[in-house]
Image (cartoon, rainbow, N blue to C red; front, side, top):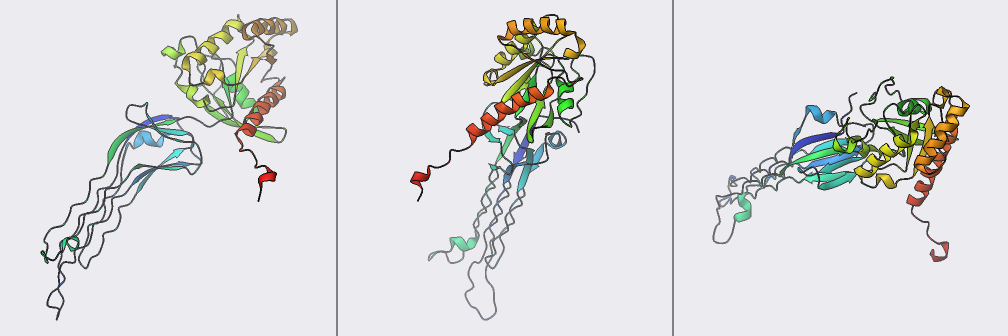
Length: 344
C-alpha cells in the first residue's frame, strides 16, 4: 500500500428538502385546508478516526464528498426524510485543517472520535405552517436551506510511542526491522526510506509502537533532500532514538546536523527526551568503536549507547531505555486516582 499523509478534499452537506403545497381533499369534508408537509433536513458531513488505517491514500482517488439532499415534504403533512450523511474515515492521528492548511479544525487522536464538519441545511416549511385566521388557504411553502461547502486539508501524524531520527544510512530501517515485524526497504544508498514505517516492539512482556522516518540532511528544513515534512510523524512520540552511524567520519558533526534540523523544525520536537546511540558497531574493532564513541560523546554531551542491528549487540539495552521513558510518560498522562479520604 502506498503511503500518503496529506490530502486536500472538498465537502458539501446536503440541501434541505422543500416544503410541500398541498390541500386536504376528502369526500364529505367541506373544508379541507392546507396539509403540505415540511422538507427533510440535508445530510451532514462527518469525519471519524477508525482503526486499521495508517495512510490517507484513499483520498488521492476521491476528493469530493457530498451528502444527500433532504426529501421534499408531501401532502397529508408528511415530513420528508433526512438526507443520508457522509462520513470521512481517517486514521487515528489525523488533523483536519482549513483551506489555508494552517488553521486547525480538529485533531483526531483517539479511535472512534467523530467531528461534524458541515451540517446539512434545514428543510423548508410546507404550506400547513402558514395557515392563519386571515389566510385559510396559503399557497406558499419554503424551499430547503442550502448545505454548507468547504475545502479542507487532511494531515496525518502517526501515533507512535518512540521515533527514530538520524542521517540517511544511519541504520534506522535496519534497527526497526531487527526489533519489530516491520519490513522497511533496506539498501546501501541514501534515502532508501521514502515514507514513515511503523512497528510494534516487545521487550520484557511490554510493548510500544516505534516509527522510522526518512533521513535528515543539512538544510532539510529549507527543503534540501526530501525536506523535513515527515518529522510530523514523530511529534507525538514520548522519546526519540537518535542513531549515529559508527562509519561516519565525524560522529559529532553528524549528531549536530540532525539536532539543528530538529530545532529548526520546531513544534516542540527538539525538547522531547532523546537517547543517543552509536549504530553499526559491528563494522569496527574495539579501538575504533571507542574512538567514535568518544567523539560522539563530545558532540552530544553524554556517553552514547552502543548498538548493532546485525549482531544484535546492545539492542535490548536500547529498547529497555526507550521503554523506561515511555512508561514514565504514560504514568504522567494517567489521571491521578482520587484520594480515598474524600470518597463517599
